[in-house]
Length: 282
Image: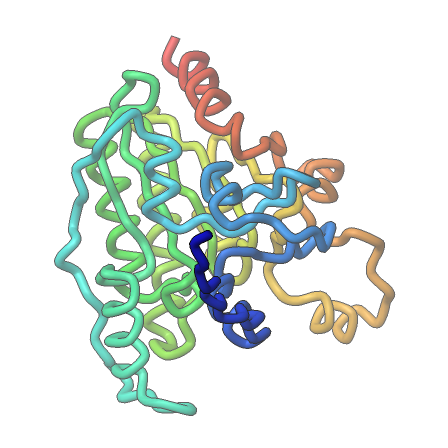
C-alpha cells in the first residue's frame, strides 16, 4: 500500500475591507435623485441618465456632440483661449484655474463649436462644458458663440446651442458681461437672415447665459429636471421678500409658465431636434 502525504493548502485570508474598497472605487455611483447605487458603465452607456429613475446627470461637451451628431464633426475656433485681462486672484490666480481646466479637459475654454450632421442634415452646434470653471461665459465663450452664429448665417445652416453654465465668468469682470450684448446682437442678425436657432437648456443654465442666448432660440427646449434661472432662489427670496413656489426654476415649472417650448428626455433629443428642423426648413 502506497502512502502519500497530503499537502496542506495555505488558508486563504479574507480580503481586507480597505483593499476591496480600492478595487471597486469609482465603479459605482449613487443617483442624486433616487439614491440607488448604479454601475457606472451602465450610466455611461445610457448617456448619463439613471436607469432606475431617469434622473439626468451632467453630460460633457464632447459626449453631447456624440449624442447629437451622426458621426464625427469639424471643430471650429479650437485655438481660442482666454487671457487674464484683470490679473484676477481669489483663492488662486485665474491663470492657474485656466491651465488646470485646460489640462484636465483638453479644451481651450468652456465650449466646443462644431460643424457636423444630425440625421444627415448639416448644422452648427455649440456644446458647453460645465467642468471648465462651471461652464462660465468669458470673452472666449462669447466670441466662439458669435463666430458660430456668423458661420451659420454664412452657410445658411441651422444652429443648435446646448447650454450648461453657471453664468458670466466673474474673473473677467465687465468683459464677460459684454458678451451678453454681443451674442444677442448676433442672434438678431441670424433671425433677420431667417436661419433657425434651437436652444437646448440643461442642468444648470443660469446667470448671464440664461439672460442671453439660452432663452433667445426660435425653439427653447430643456432636459427633465434642469435648473434654469438667472439669480439663485435665496437671492430672489431676499429681494422680493416672498417664499418661492415648490419646484421653482426647474424645467417643468418653466414649461408650465410659458418660458419653454418643451421638456425633452435626453434619449429623444436628437429625434426631437431633427423633427423640429424638418418643420423649420420645410
